Amino acid sequence: MTEDARYEMLWDCKYCGQKKLLGLTHRFCASCGAPQDPGARYFPSDADKVAVADHPFVGADVGCAACGTFVSRAAKCCTNCGGPLAGGKDVQLRGEEVRADAAAFAQGQKGALAPNLYQGQAPPPPPAPPAKKSSLGLILGILGGVLVLALVALLVSVFWRKSGTFEVAGHTWLRTIDVETYGATRKEAWCDELPGGAKVVSRKREERSKEKVQDGEDCQVKRKDLGDGTFKQVRECQPRYKSKAVMDDRCTFEVMAWKRARTLKAEGKSLEPAPAWPRASLRTGTCEGCEREGARDEKYEVLFTSDGAEHACAMPEAKWRAFTKGQRVEGKARVVTGGLDCASLR
Ligand SMILES: [Zn+2]
Ligand SMILES: [Zn+2]
Image (tube, rainbow, N blue to C red):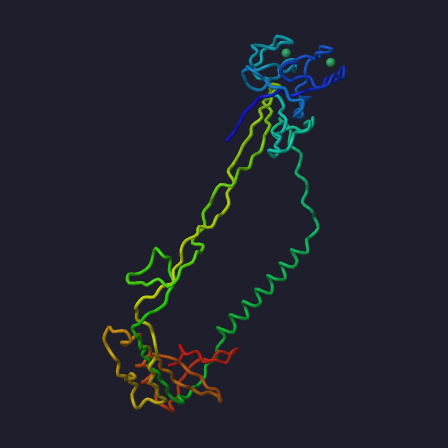
């Protein structure tokens, strides 16, 4: 959203000292008649602001190439010497002024020129960056060094390995079956997302999501030098947002469902007797309290010894069977942590 208005720039006569002459209306000093110097224009304070009515904007003033007088862009030729205006130079513009909506403008700085006005000459060099090295940089440098060292140490501990002989010391296996029972299970969900057959036990209000809602707007006022003795004042606003909680009903409900009740386990510490699944007589059906088999799991480990240390390697059952007690195999041990690299066994 913008609101536009056009006002007169001000200028002071350097010959007679007359202050606050109008940029558009007073092309010559109202007191002594000296021509206006466009370089002396400045933004007025809010109190000194004079609106421009019904004066078309034709562009910034142009400087006569022959005598240097600045005249309106609407002029056919120089009002001072009569020379042509083609090839004349642009007027120097004041830098844009910006303030918060509630603040007021003080009188503008006469010397502040927009950066695009260093015509034909190089702009002043930017200020040199501060030379002193901050202690923050030093701390970051040390942290970086420590991080690199830690990474190197980690890589060494993982990849530095040496060959060795390992003796098969034994076998272990474990097989489990989950047993699930059918019964009332208490769960929680949004009340509009309940499964079929759910019996609501209680409900409460809870935050379900956030939404962005407008919370007023932020405005600023800008003044832009038009270069013809006037400036444009624009108010620009942008909506400000805040996050707002969206509440909804959260239900605690009961529903009939299968739920893990216990785990059957069978295990052994040798190749023979061969691993078998645990057995149980289940009360099957879909009654309340009925049972069924859930997930199965199995784990096979071969134990190795080397220099008095024991290592266990998990592997699939077929590979596990291929190792015999007392057998010696070649493998690689991690030098730093001392562990056996199970993938290296041959
Ligand atoms: Zn004067
Ligand atoms: Zn001229």
